[in-house]
Image (cartoon, one colour):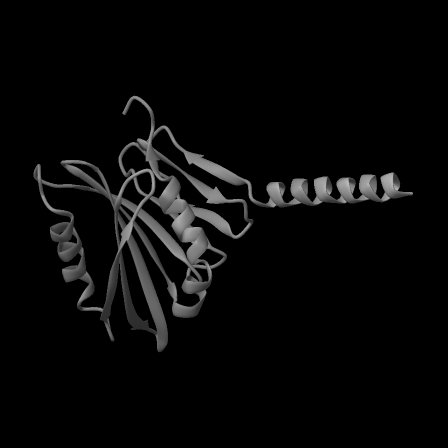
Length: 175
């Protein structure tokens, strides 16, 4: 009787572990027109809206609908040795004209590339919106910025996913 309970408990534990690991899987983004990859959470919510091409190497995704979460990935070329804070200030200058713009705090970030996260809020069509930009330093002359924008509460609710995408952002080997 005791061994039967143990085997049932073991079977349930293994089934639970396999179910959790299946849910935790992610899908990898890679395209011949860009030199980077990243992992998207395994969710039907993330959909590509802009596919990179040879002429325009931009990538964009939305989480469900654009208002819930919008991701743009951009490459920023700078002079050698440009500090990360200067890159962030240059991007922030572009945001200051948004209605209701309020700068948030910056956070250090560690992933495949180290960097910082810049948070801000603004108003669009009478709705409180948030932005969360991940500035990742690839080398002395290249930064990547992962721009997440969405309705404030919705963007905060998927923060674990935005962090995961930024953490897995990496250059393809040999690039």
